[in-house]
Length: 172
Image (cartoon, rainbow, N blue to C red; front, side, top):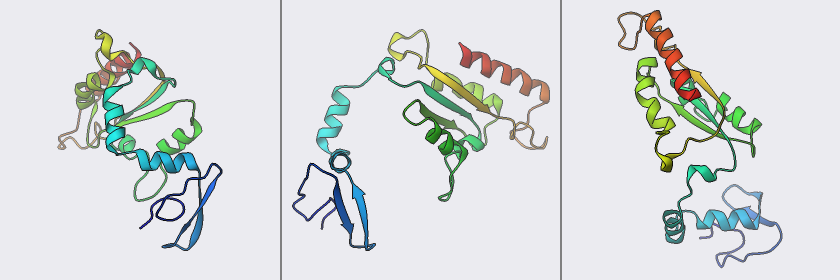
């Protein structure tokens, strides 16, 4: 069975390769680079290279866009095959920034304060240098304003204090 362009012997060509997907009966364009890359990922050589040469955050060539929030953020890349707001943002900033989604369904701002240090890292630790942020979104509040009988509910005063604290920690 063949999973690459051409027949089972994987004939690589220097120009764009055109593959025929027999299962779907349509032509699919696939470049030689993407074919080689897709066949390399997950192999023993790939795991060895990635574990032997870890890249520190300081070597990032692109700034990050951090999406931090509740389920609105968690499902921002879409659900059930639909396109979400985060995927549209990632497409708009393609090759200019990395979009990092950190959404936590059911979380309120009190929970967010607990997980924020693990997302941002420890700025005093040089091996965990803070990533350069282009910008950050903070989408919390839907769970905070739930009915008073719900476990996520917070009073407006506590919500306001938490949001101010979250923003100030991200700005550091």
